[in-house]
Length: 475
Image (cartoon, rainbow, N blue to C red; front, top):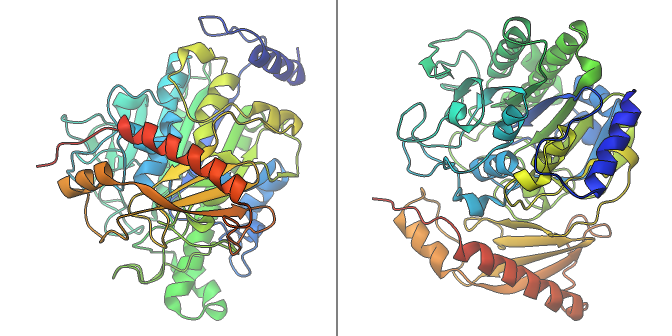
């Protein structure tokens, strides 16, 4: 039986009544690899229009698979976005409302079942390498760690690589501190991932690799040889550092993909590349002096509910299944990864917790558009630029602002919880995204019937999620 027959069986199974146990697939299941960048903008890759940065390995990945022009992160900020990717749920449902400071009470709770949990239960070996950022008490018994959320093997940091991407000293491997390392973070995590493939992989099992890079989040540090290449093309050294940082990440992806090829694993491995949110704003805080990321033509950046904060690069390669060189403008979210990969792995839909994402396998295999039951939804109470919540339904995107006004920049504290409980959406904007990607034409007045209908749906969704959201007790 060939791979096409395997996919036909998957699609037939998706349309059939689910059983109550893992499906016995007729063909070998694929391995899965997810690369997740940190603060990489929609316009930061050469394949997405950057005029200076060269990313040949990711451009090649796109020519061998599918490139999405409307791929969305689950949130406009790191920890919530990662929670959404890992659980398939809108981040507020999991209690991850903002980036998680070190030693903070906020964390991905033990009862949440992650993509790694489901795949491990289905017989996959699971491993992660890079930035975790789903707890505050990292490598402490008070909160779940990567190993408690489905990863057999992990080498991770709580948040950023410290003191920077160069020679980090804060990695932990399977609960043991690694100590000082020499090199750059993206290359170091790929080194570890390749060593895992060579030394830890059980060839009788499929594997899932989650590789969340620290790049290009501040503090940015890049190889001098790359920095010098970009100096003639940059306004200053800080900008050259950023350009080189993205290029170094691309080179790390290239090394990993070459290792898959050399080991004969590439043909049966689905590889996905994306980012956790839009690019950081230059000089938003003192150490953001190298944040020269680009949202392309999109409005807003990281922390915005507008497209520049949530629309990110999205590339998937699956040889023999996804037609090479295809593009799609169908909206897809990182929330969709869990149900889609679980379906490919033969995991019964009825065994999965209630999700906000959906299985988009037909889009990957046939290019067929998917009828989304739940419109895509975002909420971030500290969003900058005005609106704090948004929903996309087909071509339409409605964004809502609350009655509280902009919140001051602060760590997540009890006052933050109190503010969440008081929040109410009162003002709306409406955009037709295919016609107005830059979100410059508010149609809430001229298309009032559509705006009113979507506003009612957005308010209902907002109320339902807020009423059932986790309320952390913060001392």
